[in-house]
Image (cartoon, rainbow over all chains, first blue to last red):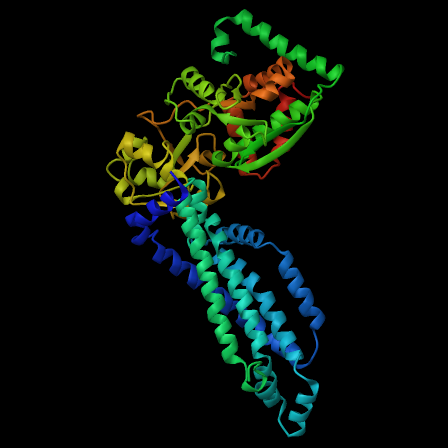
Length: 228
Length: 307
């Protein structure tokens, strides 16, 4: 059977389109866990990052965080989180271990880009804002955050695309998501299943990339848009 | 053609002679010149038992002067078999029945028959199956004590009236494997309510069975966890599973390069290894997290292969 035939065969199976292992269920699981991981990571690290950016400290910390974040393997975190959480009473097949690993993956780029983005705002701009009588809060919300929004959004975009690609690992610890097709396809030597899974993950990552790039442009204040 | 040990046992004198020969050659290598040639690349499947047996081979070979490279925990049979055929690895502990199923030969619960058909099929692919060990490890269909009591389950056929309400958990390849879901359906007529893809009788399947996410789990008959948790391994009363003797699968080129000394050495390990040994060693690795290399070393020492 050729690769293309096995893809067709997989796409023609009724279980591919309905039931607990259907593309819709797997896509839904994949998206919600990815979105949740990025949102939770944002809630965890953005307040600190914004504050560090505002007081213009911690750029060394930011660099260290992103370097450590790059070095720690998501699969390692996933395996440890799985074993620990199961011992604490979490059920096999529940998404918690995957969430932990993805939050750890999403946090560093968001943290670093936010710190760097705020610190990249021209000191002269902030001085003039203060000179105009803006309070520190107003300087932050009215000047620093809008001006750093494109870089912050870029951090979110990087994090989200990485998370979508990495959420496939969840299938190795009995969770679902689109990684299920990749892991099962590999184990069963079912090329069709494997390829459909990989392509869907790729398409989802591209869609996220395009969507968030548009949002990144949208959040860029008119004054600093390159195409003005 | 080398014969399995059961066949040898028929002629006790011949058997003794062979064992003596095996020991003799081992000693000779220790004293004399080390065997020359490429390193022997020893691989294993991705579960502890396979790692332990591979370590027994590897450490035993090393002690007799062979150079060994380890590729342990390589993956499932879908990964290991092509690696062996392709010459990326040289030696792996196989299971006669599962291998035979993979090679699409007829399955048999007779140890000799199963070994002979797997051997013949693998030979064509450039891989030699040496003599098999009496140690066996079959697929075990396991339920918790509570589940067994609730549905009064002792054998796999007891599942027939209740399978439709139960969730089955096993490795991701289970829906395609003749000894897993397809075999259970064909031989026993079992259709479970749901199949959950987990791992190959490892910590995930154990945790899922413990946590009640699945009702029936695919483990191995030599799993230490079954007895430790007072779980019930359902009796394969209709004989779905073939004989599953552990057998060294080694590339024919390597056998030819090193000759009878190597074969005699591996045969001596196969002959000494028992199912009880496997169960005890698995329990130490799976439950007590002991290092498979140390467990293997201890086995070699206890059985007189290492000092």
